[in-house]
Length: 287
Image (cartoon, one colour):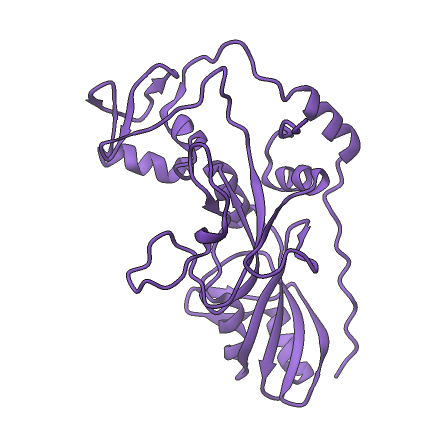
């Protein structure tokens, strides 16, 4: 096997300490909230990404003050908004949107959906309750994949972080069955034709094992379905274990344990918003 360089994990490079200080100073609520576009109000309520919510509006699923909503509508906190006949509790000037992001350690054998027709366990049973809105995952992990999963109450942030245009790195620990050669690894770096286009690992690091059971750390900059598994299968190797250990600047580490969650640190939070192209707006800290 050829020698593989270790990955160096670097957070984005804004001046984090100053960004955190400035954002905290701006975290207090304003005295008035002007009307905002309907899709923004729905996204702020945690109902999904703005792009998805625009489709809901086009489909006639949203009503404002008794009439079917149209794209371009603006709403204030006092307007009555219904989605599929259910009232939406909007943010207000005295109850502004407080962006939250959690890191969940997803166990194997659980699905990333709220309701599963097969009644398999879902990751949402592990998450704390929200006063309003709902938790939205940043991308997905399949039932047989474990590891780092970010969840947020902001649909726009979830959409931005998962969008291919942002090219946010995802790092996985993967156990591979099959004889792995240097030529295979080079193919995986150069690019392999899959059914949905060419895909590649931007980095591969040997992480231990021998013969037909070897561990690698691999990095992708997109999140296609089963992409890690399909890439290895394309070079005649089978993935027997798969765990995501990093998303952007956020690293899983030894804690939390499977099925547990934690809040992001201030540095992780600021770095993640930077990767998403969002303004730095800190969470109010509990006294």
